[in-house]
Length: 190
Image (cartoon, rainbow, N blue to C red; front, side, top):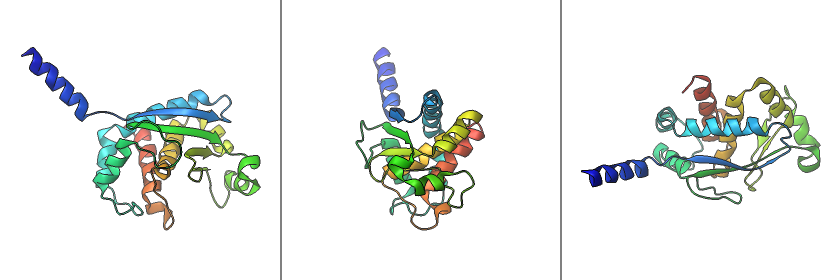
């Protein structure tokens, strides 16, 4: 009986292996590192939740690389990064930085301004796997302790790292919708 119980425990742990998140680098986050860690922690909780799973499996998305919703969910849960240095499967490996005029150019910094017509909050790093966040938005979110917003941003940019884009209608794309799902689940107490 004891062997059966141990075997059952091992099987159930294997079947429900959860994804973890590791932030390997935080460049330009001076004083906001803890806020980033808290946002990543709640992002992991959301991604491992049944409500997130249901939202992905039952959602309507464009630009999902001809994958089914189940395949998209499985890809997220596998956490095998296609862009950047990657890391261990089942671990969402994030490398984050704030944007700057020196690295990203003045155009991007204009787009980062709150209220700009472009409404940029960050970018995926162009295949480097490094998530770039507008420093103005990071400061606003940190001051408001808005972990939902940063977690949603990380989820959005992570979908790029998994190989998805939003070249057509942004609002219906998988990338945007996953970020919105994460943010809303956090706000609603998933």
